[in-house]
Length: 460
Ligand SMILES: [Zn+2]
Image (cartoon, rainbow, N blue to C red):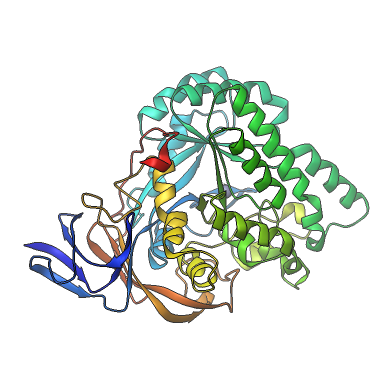
């Protein structure tokens, strides 16, 4: 007897998109059968007319984080509720090395934030902020604990310690870890920002000019050289520009293992948004770009240059975003977890830019493989965790922040008309969201220890 059966859906598996019935036993996918061929189940969900997809894996979130001496508005409870409502069943959040503290301190601190609160499963990356000899010596032990990726910010002080960072890169590569790199050149940005501020151009309409596409491409090139020298694999987070994506293409053509992520805001919004009265609400690092860059990112999604679409969910109230005054003081980031999956379906699949399989690769399978969680997460295969989304491809939703589960009081996509929305989210065999209503106790999510990075992740 199965615990749960989902019948009648069109199922997206690694081998294709086809009608099938899926059975669950003890939190796992037990069988994927031709329609009508499943054994009886205690509970059956009729999913006719629906797509059944793996729960999304978002490897880039900032929940309960501190930036600019402020706390993000979503903690692990509200953030994972928003995630679940949007069809995301696993996140990997960035734990920050505390000032004067160790990498282990970062994990302990983030464990305390997530435990008892998260309603879906979670892992951590650790952001290396002080690449001291002690920190570098710690790297192999952190990898042993299932935290197999490290964030590198190429901003504020990176260049002054580039040689120490090279040593950290080397240690990470030797430990089988992946480097998640925020690529923006601090000196190019500093130069542009200084000039703008000196001319009195400190309002948000000048924000994009303070961090031009060239500053991203220059940092990508520098990181490619540094990771080549130190033999460490590089994953570029939230790429935003044509030039940066071109650098990734060229590096791959030379045989480098290089991974690339982008973020929803660069696919759906352009820099004209900064001219709106509350334009500061769209501030993130890097900034929104022109339509030319947006279109280049869509091409890179379709041709395989970009591997992952991740949210960089980092939410604030509108008041926090717009009250800062000059653009250098606006806290970066915004809420995105609930819209990640449906908006990429609506703007990507429904508009014919990417296939259904590519949508699932970009939001679930690739991240699970790259970050060492496959096949437990990220695909509908027998033996995997039963993290599933019954997705209604015809449901129309107008984005309205009042209906969203983030504690942010605005949504960057307010008013967007979206075709396709999750009807049900299932986490390890348990329905936790039905028709946009979250019904899951805080703390039911578990820590996911991740495997080391595999350079052959695509063929797994
Ligand atoms: Zn981030």
